[in-house]
Image 1 (cartoon, rainbow, N blue to C red):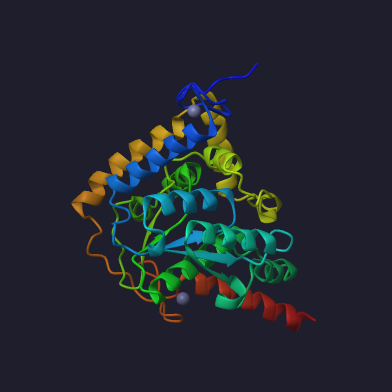
Image 2: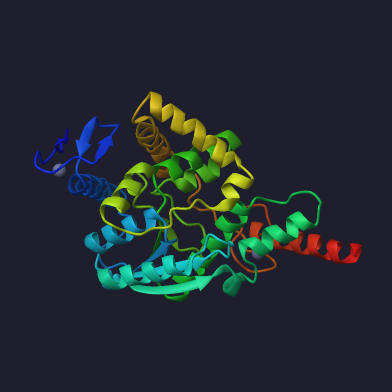
Amino acid sequence: MEVVCSVCGVKRASVYQRHSGLKLCGDCLYGDVKARVLNQMSRYSMILPWERVLVGLSGGKDSFVLLNILAELHSPSRLVGLMIEEGIYGYNRDEVLEYMRSVCRDVGVECIKTSLKRELGYTVDDYMKHQLSSGREYIASACTYCGIARRRILNSYARMLGLDKVATGHNLDDEVQTYVINIMRGDFMRLLQLHPLSSVHSSKLVKRVKPLRMVYEYETTMLAYTMGYRFQEAECPYISTRPTLRVKVREMLISLEMRRPGAQLRFLEFIDTVLGTAVGTGVFKSVELPHCRQCGEPTSPNRDLCKFCELIDRMKMAQWLEISDQ
Ligand SMILES: [Zn+2]
Ligand SMILES: [Zn+2]
């Protein structure tokens, strides 16, 4: 029997929205998600009407949804899409990136493509290969290297092009996982940095915004499907080969969400309120981050070598030991 959408009462429902108990058609799901994005954007003044924004595009479901909604809520001529090829064998597919480019063209957004190899010298595969073949102590996961590298490239393009913000497609699940991980690490400074109202602590950093932070991952998946996008469905191979803390936290949160639908949404709302008070008092307002002695980019307080340079140095060391062993 065909189920009718709980909102419009006309179209066939294709999604059961667990946290609201509603059965929605593709159009009503889009309307609901767009409203949540608009709410976050105006509540935290994420993107002001005259601002020019770099949009990080991975070719995954989140990037199609982000691009589409931003092109509707903001002037497409003030958006620039940046696609970064990570260099992961069997995962980065040229046709996905070419398709992404055509979608950018359809919504009137300029699009640039680059790669980790071109910008930083090492793909994710290069990085992992040298670590694993050295047979020595494991340095850091592929996700750590990839995450830091992508953030660095997004920031440097935004800075180079003189853009005001960097928008990424992080969804609710991503955001809650990051909060939980940093709570478990007891990293209060980083927790505050995650709040949408936090300020940047270096003139070299461009403020990052996450318009989809209140949208569940399953919602972006369903939207990308119902909107007919051909997105990258395969999961990155490094996620299953070596489960990180994030993967474990993600599994835990998914099972909690099954028992208590809406738990992640309420968690984020709660933590936003609590941290908002601390951000408002300006505990870290005057902090100016030091610069890395090697690359000159901003680094964490009390560090003179940034995490990125540290990873690269240790990888080069592993590579050198490997050669000298032969
Ligand atoms: Zn409907
Ligand atoms: Zn550095």
